Amino acid sequence: MSQGVKETLREVRARVEATDRVLEPAERTNIAATLTGADYISLSALSVAWGSALLFLRGEPNLALLAMFGAFLLDKADGWYARRTGNSSPFGRRVDSFIDVFAYLVPAALLYRAFSPHVVATWIVGFLVLAFGGLRLIRHNAEGFGEDGARSYYHGTTVVHTNLLVVANYVLAVFVGWSGLLAGVVIAAACPLMISNYKAYKTDASHIFAGVGALIAAGLALCLELGYL
Image (cartoon, rainbow, N blue to C red):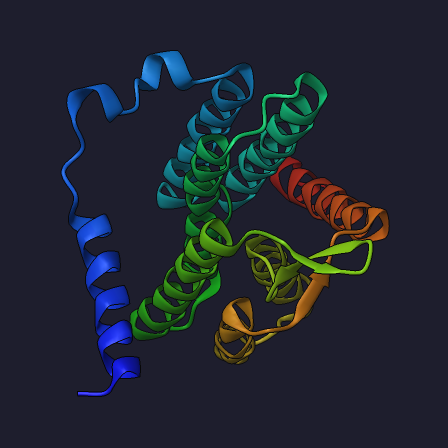
């Protein structure tokens, strides 16, 4: 056996042993002591996102959208608070990614259910949103941001992009009769982009665009709920 092959096998064995290693009690994370103010804001976002999911399941998509955007706001607030207080940490980023599943991915899957033409379409699109979105969050936790000179970027489109795409299709379905089947095709085709090598740069313009889009959608949802539209 060549030296190169032996070295590769040793590296693989070391990775497996590191993954399967049983931690000593002193090495285990004390969750209560580790949580920061930013993490508690994240958990607040989880609470609101769960309320959004319940509203979707009760057949109240417009109220659910409003709750979902409330979860968005809290999700953004936790990052701002962490940076402001200097409490950013790898643990906090993992907590944030866990919350993102319920703040962005689960609501997106449930929102498509509100205008899906068939349970099979709901099943397929929901699975793709959750699967590719989950893989995207796992990769981000493992790799972090990419760097292009002085600019940081996400690898692949984000779960926010996917969520807003579903929201846009919902708005089109409500106001112009956009086909739920075609919407499903569009959403399904966009899901693999979350694990692509597309560079989604972190810019003020992108945050402003997402914020404005969310505000417009929230305003439309409120008007629909109140009967103004």
